[in-house]
Length: 327
Image 1 (cartoon, one colour):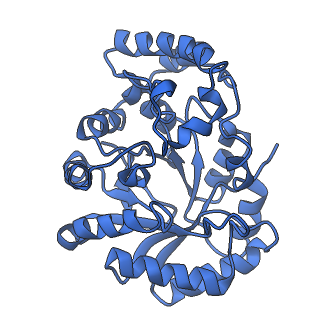
Image 2: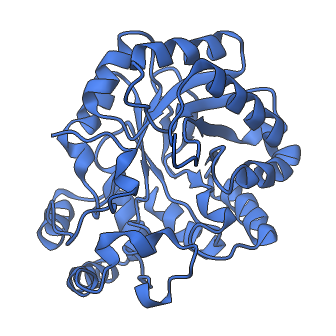
Image 3: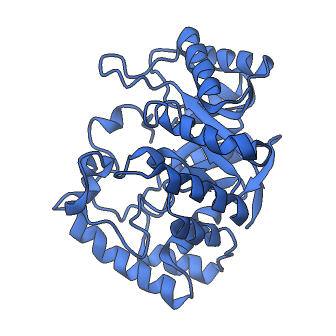
């Protein structure tokens, strides 16, 4: 497993991290004991950066993670987030009062006094990012958080935020399935010495040996509302994915490992953040952290899955309201 810094002055972590969103049923029913076993296995693989949020399962992901941290706190570099309310009338709240309330709630649920990396989960459009940075910097100065992160922002927002104080990490969806960060946020993170923490690097399961079957998505599976899985788009996407899967096998890799390796090849400041409660899946993901792709391999991957190849936008109308648009 490669190790990379979590921001300019951050700790060294495994280049592959662990996301906990699906520990609480985002992609279907979840078994807490299975999730806890996966966390333990991840540490042994070199996966030591665990990412969660106050809204994953409305706090249940943090509560589950606290059970693991009781015995492993010194081995885990922890990240959590705030800024999403799940209130349809006021979906984002970046006010100092709300952010403090949510930080205190996360600390209590996690059973910790300090979170190494704390993200603004979504930027409330009406509130200047400079004001939000001041709030986050106060949390840092109080010792409640170690570093500041921003999630799903535009490069211009990063530029303004970094003028106020150091941003250690930016979290964005980035994979062979979703390449928008190449339009500015990948470069912006490098310029500001911030880590680009790339969530869904396996494309929500599509860049794997067993791509999902949309007709089997359960009621709570968020992919049901994603246009790329529609009856019109999915067959077209699946055809491309088969070619990528065959190429991965021809090179002695699983498609998930190859997809992770591709993300990590984008720059030494890039961290891959897959989410899984399956030990077998995380083993495949972790293998990607040990693969160095050759120029010829990168060229062939680009031929198979060129920029913009996926049919359909990554989010439907409702989910598109939070991430900042750019370019």
